[in-house]
Length: 332
Ligand code: UT7
Image (tube, rainbow, N blue to C red; front, top):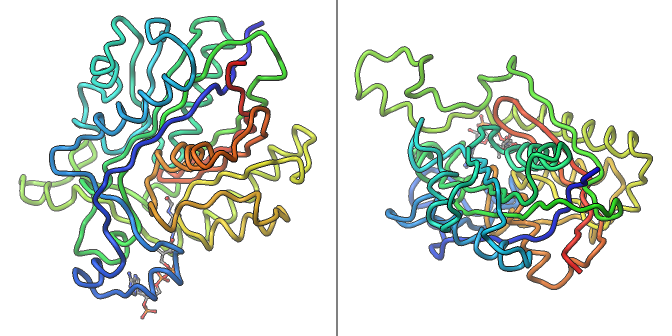
């Protein structure tokens, strides 16, 4: 049987920084409020002509190079995004694979908001274990600034842009294998976090009304409470199912939405500070890109070593959630 190994990571962040001070000149807020309530100090914003696919390609090039896999052997590309280059079609994954010069590969996007990376990891694992594919490039990429309302202080202080990518490859060595992935969704909470534009559910009569509802809307406080509850339940379940103690986790890498959410889950698991990976202070919430961007951070700091066990945990619009137990398994 083939197993799926997490071989490599790469990420890209745009150079432009949007600080809390900058935002306090745009909406009625302050650095003190934002930092105290979210842990965020600044976030990155892509240039006007810097599309989601371009950030994704930069992240993917690094992940491919670090994997040691020849790009001609990549047979599938999956992109998790809620801010694709184009809504409906073509998919961002097809644009990415063409820009990378990958030739004839299976390529598609998925929409699971901030849980997107855990969802595409589970898709890659399933395709590899079934024997259908061998080397899969997965990417979480977001230009959330393109769907953020910069007059709404409840959301614009949270979100940023960026991309992260990973190579997931077939191996026959069980020790290298992704151990388990849990995913879930509950549409009864759909209205907590949504962009009510453009789709067949849109009730607008005019294009002006339509355009006004292109942005993300969030019931932040309700979302916060469900997030803490769901994320904690999720990680407790995946650890129990696999008979793994939280002390065996080298890095807990949660979706970076809010420091207070991360702290609450970390405390519930009795994790030590050095086990919890935090990037929310410098990148804000980058939805499907946040987990691979955080993994890349520990990789580039030199802290991520072969065999380190990562616990990923995500929560987002849908509502969706997911967790994964993933050893870092670069090619030896
Ligand atoms: O990534 C996907 C999942 N998303 C999340 O997990 C996000 C979850 N939610 C959150 O992170 C938090 O709910 C927020 C950071 C969005 C808000 O923090 P909160 O502690 O839940 O604040 P709140 O919404 O309960 O608002 C408290 C007060 C309100 O004023 P009043 O009614 O008490 O007078 C808000 O109007 O803070 C006010 N407020 C602000 N004040 C200054 C809301 N946003 C701001 C702001 N600056 N940016």
